[in-house]
Image 1 (cartoon, rainbow, N blue to C red):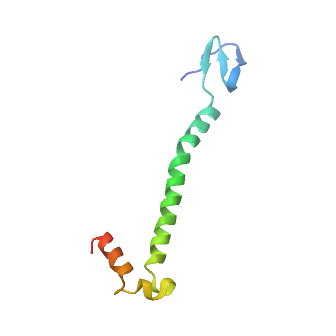
Image 2 (image 1 turned 60 degrees about the vertical axis):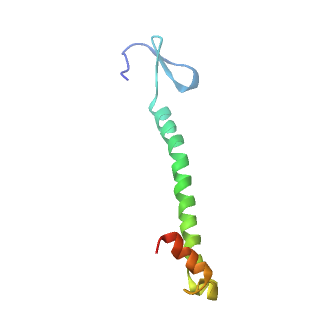
Image 3 (image 1 turned 180 degrees about the horizontal axis):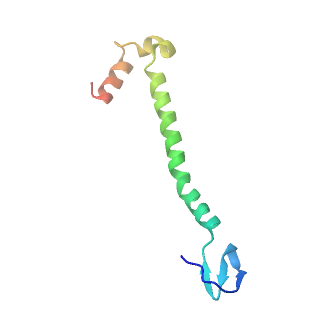
Amino acid sequence: MYIIPGRMRFGKRNRIKNEGKCVVTMMQKIQKFGGAMFTPVLLFSLAGIMVGIGTLCTTEAVLGSLAAPTSINSQMHALAAGK
């Protein structure tokens, strides 16, 4: 959106009024983009936590005999992975 030259004054909600036309400021664009990126960032962090928990459940050093290749837990993980 182009800013029309002329007398500018600040209006409501940090918008600049230029002869009756509202112009969106750069700060509002950045805030809108930041709000849109909030949910994907949360989903990526939760997915990483789930991968970490899944790795811990298949590590024999952490769970001992429960994560052994012959245990039911290990066989369920292999079935879910499609092996």
